[in-house]
Length: 337
Ligand SMILES: Cc1cc2nc3c(=O)[nH]c(=O)nc-3n(C[C@H](O)[C@H](O)[C@H](O)COP(=O)(O)OP(=O)(O)OC[C@H]3O[C@@H](n4cnc5c(N)ncnc54)[C@H](O)[C@@H]3O)c2cc1C
Figure 1 (cartoon, rainbow, N blue to C red):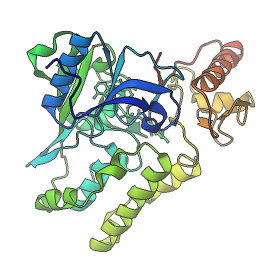
Figure 2: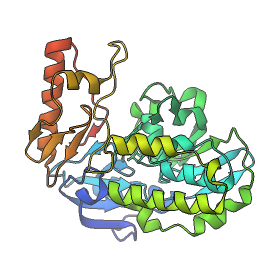
Figure 3: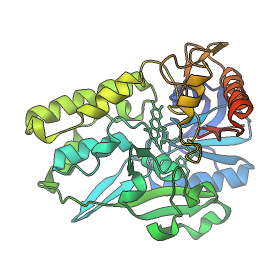
């Protein structure tokens, strides 16, 4: 395929619409593949047109530039949502929201994925970063990951089993390889009571809502669905209250953000947020970006922030922690140049 006429390929799109930070300038090329073959066609186009593919999911762990490179083809997996069940395995495409896994669990009767509730982002982004909530990591549930090697995409879809994915705290092999995660097989440890409920449940979803990067839309849509599932099933069988309380307490959905900006450095013994608090960095503002008044490891967009405002605050936290504690915190969020 050499033409730029692919249905999932769009021109001149504001990246701010595709990131939970709501930050980012105009992308000259942006694609939303809906199936595996779209991905391969897009990679062919990118190669023929001399464009550099930049993959992402929901944009909940990255910062887009104010002036994107016109030679970049931004590819978000969010429109590729396919889920099937086969006994103790869920096959899930990379664009599937992680939070949806929790609702699927509630619909089919397994609590395995409860920890994903209100965890923004797609499965692909979660596998890349080994997303976690307290002691639960997405890697605990991975059996096999399917990917395309961007350096040799004509080989098609390949796969890797979990033992070889090099998962650790906020790490995976996918951060070191130029691979496009397409889908994964997830293990279901607590077998579902009614697996046949999966497809009817999926058919009722509003895809537009699931693809939206606004954190407010995200939280209200999932809360609405949780209430509905509670009414249909035994309310006590859906124990996500502590997650809701925790995330609302941290004002996760109040302002656009990417959640925690830095990885914790466990050799120090205290989370980065606590160190930033001790240095009285909470509430510090630059332009329209602000270190959250309630969490020192979150930088919020208070309305119209630029990428450079966020980067300024990232450097401020790094320099302050280096000066007082002798190390430079490593960002968790991916800064797109
Ligand atoms: C309010 C809030 C709360 C959060 N809480 C948590 C939390 O509790 N725990 C946690 O772990 N994270 C948390 N995060 C961060 C974020 O939700 C996760 O890191 C999530 O996994 C990112 O998924 P994404 O689809 O948005 O990835 P993106 O932000 O779109 O991309 C992130 C990185 O993954 C790569 N990537 C994405 N998809 C693919 C793919 N298909 N193939 C190859 N590479 C890919 C991108 O290239 C990029 O480098 C939070 C974020 C927010 C906004």
